[in-house]
Image (cartoon, rainbow, N blue to C red):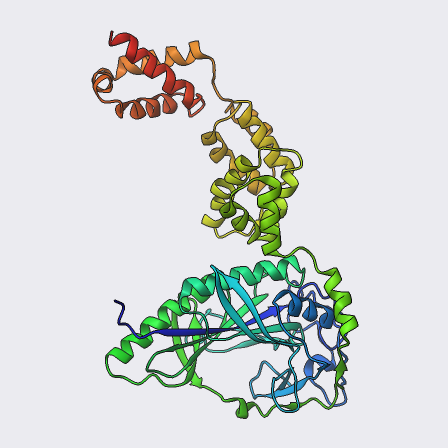
Length: 479
């Protein structure tokens, strides 16, 4: 029985609405990442006296799409509030946000997401503006002697998606974030592969201690690492009789630890009140129903359709759909190549694994449906083996070269001529007399012989033919 203090985890996920053309309350471009720092600005971004914000209507529509997709309730009116705090990343000393309390109303509340048959409740969704980007030259707040600020990001439209503390493990947190990422990508609200487009504040409490918030964690993997580190830290403190205090901590990604930042604020500290520059917006049910009709196929429905349409396993369909770009690649390739289970296996077991091992994003790959369909057809024809596929995959992904071109330039065509393979086997056995004798007594040694022949042919021989010929030769010689 597990006697360790139980952990409760809640997430505040901040999502850039990267598909917006302009910022949330002004006409400045939302495409700022390649610009010189502090050049995509206006008086509204900086909160200069007399600058009046005007809501981006497309941001409201995107927020309502997320509201419906996450099974939330929506209000009759949308009310913005000022969240006051005094940090250099917010020049006007308040953030235009929302608050589910007196005089204010969030865009959504009381929703849920299902992961592994478990419901993770959504407390609320807020529309808010992003502050400026804080840059630590060394990558660490503690070791940097100064801080840089880029206000190009200031005023970018964001959704803050707040869960109830229903998450209990780092694995559940990652599953939730992966599912949320897939939903947002299918809604075309956020390109979550863009650096910094999806960040999370992680609230963690261990039974017997106060809630600790770790701010501004940049990826699902980092969220997983934060939870594992922080739960272990808090449990160790509690078991040693120490007090875990309510505080805000910072994730030092360079050292992979959390560092105390400041005492945790309460809602009262932010002094929320309605923004007098932004009037309440009525949200009519007819407008919401129009948006509901435009919703695309969402991840859960897509998984079920792909299982039915293509006959692939639930596991394969789920893995593909977790990344919209990957599912799109599979379906587009499937228009040309019809062995869907074989195709999905190659995409997941070889293509996706290779990309993940190198921390790449699917969108960075140069592989197209034309590449994958040609690759599958060459395997079916026996022109190449799976070992050759693994060898040429890097050039397909990184260079965008067609499989046929790579195979011809590297002379990697599969050898399937039985007479030629038999000659190579004879040469191999002549050099391996001891192993040959052992193979007659122990069939497992055949795998070694197959490996030697494959090595001698630079992996070009068809391993099935090699295996069959070796077994045939051993049986004949053993008579």
